Structure formats: C-alpha cells, structure tokens
Image (tube, rainbow, N blue to C red; front, side, top):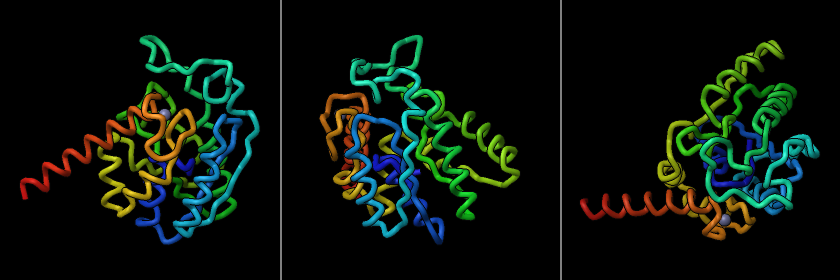
Length: 216
Ligand code: ZN
C-alpha cells in the first residue's frame, strides 16, 4: 500500500528486499494534494514495480477532516481528548480492505502497510491492535490467509530513516517523497505536524550517524 510518502516508500523498498514480486496500490480519496499521487507513480517507476491507482471517490472523506476539506483549519497539535482533525475516519479500514480484495484477484496475500504505533499521531487505525483485528476479519471475510506486514509498527521516525538508509534509498526517500500536509515535496514546508515529525526524525538519525562515525 503506497502513498508516495516517506513511510510507505520505505516500506516499498523493504518489500522489494523481502519479496520476489511487488505490486503497489495507491488510493485517491478526495485528498487536497494530488501531487503525492504523481510522486507515487514516479517512485514506482524508478523502483520498477507495477503501479495500480484506485479512486475510492469521497468514501474516506464522509467523516469531516482537514485533509479533504479545505474549509477546516488543520490541527497543528493533537488535542488532549480527541484525534487531530487530520484523521480521516476509516481510511486505513477502507484502504487495507480494498488492497486485500485487489490482492486476492492478483493472487497476492502479503500486504505491506507503513502504519506505525510508535509515532502515531493519535490515529487509532495505525495501532497494532487494529491491524491484527483487521487481518483476522479479512481472512474470515474472504476465507483466505492474508498476512498484513507492518515493518514500521514499532520503530520511530529516526529509525524509519535508518531503515531507508540500510535499504540504500535514504536520498531517494528524502528527495522524492511527499509527507507534508501542505503538499510540498522533499523536506516540505517545515512547520506542519507531518513535516515536524519527519524533519525531527531525520535530524535525530543524521546526528546519531555522525556520532557513530566520529567514534569509529
Ligand atoms: Zn509541511
């Protein structure tokens, strides 16, 4: 499952390292920034994998959220008692379910998603308990044996950069992916919550690498 962001791009190269054949599936759901789809297509081309785009219309934006509704100002921080309004209710439920249906058609039962509980920005559908629950539900729904892989579940953003580096794609992820909520590729706008998380993680990783090299 591939959005063209840092996490799923790192997962794409993790999948290429771990599986003989990899297909990507990307969703449009009325998100404000369609640039990420173009970037996803470009990265898939560079990686030499099949790119499959699925338009799920506005199904994932029925619930009001600031990623699909321009009239809502984006939460800059997680409110104490609720999800930030960048949460698209049901998004991962829809996406993973559709990926499983597509996978079944293609004879693919290993599905990789870049969700992470460690840095999760208050999104319940990024938690391990949800993924495990959905895995069981998908198997029951289609009488198949899907395996949902979550290589980033227990690692933070700095470790995600480290993983990209180990996979030999740190520069590619840094320059070619789009994580920014304001739609600016690479290092992004620098001040939205997604940029802060991404850039702080990168700084932490590069600093620790520098210290490591200094000691050698
Ligand atoms: Zn940003």
